[in-house]
Image (cartoon, rainbow, N blue to C red):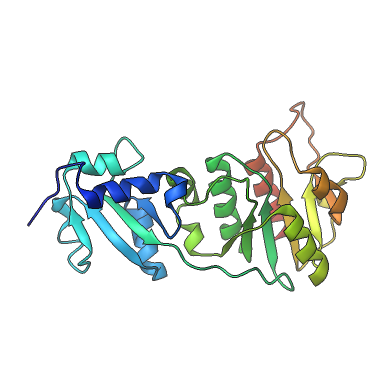
Length: 246
């Protein structure tokens, strides 16, 4: 059994490139056994598996496994204490969402990978139909976002659209857009009527939703707070709204 020990190995070098967004055109890395098991269960294409030789029994059914040293695995991983496995996953093609039915979450320029991953995971837990991320939001295929999602991108579709494209599609299909912001025109989320279909918009951590979203949304929504805090973390706010509306 050959064990790769050199960082100069071409297979290792090409996999390491997937840490950078510009190389994640058709594939991305996942790290850890939980995400690997989610990928297997989802039936996605696993191009390569990098693992420690001690896991050969667990990976006997995967001929694409490449055995590496602990040093190489640490180089490929994003955490300081990797779990012994890193895999290269093929990206899946995702068509445009069908806004004629369902409940969607739109992340408009949310830049923190942890927030993006947490909100996608929350939408998954609440049974949302899908999630849309804007072109300026954090990359869902970064290892930090993937770690925060915990495999939820295998459970529900994730689309990428601009705010303008989203608003145009929503208007054409007649699905209401609920955008979170505090203004004189916003309504407390507890006063919203029950909706079977909608797009819930969460904005950037510092700037909130864009001006075009504020002007074009069907309803502006806020969370009324009894305490003295100025605002909530965007992922916490999303959790409150997602489960209230689901």
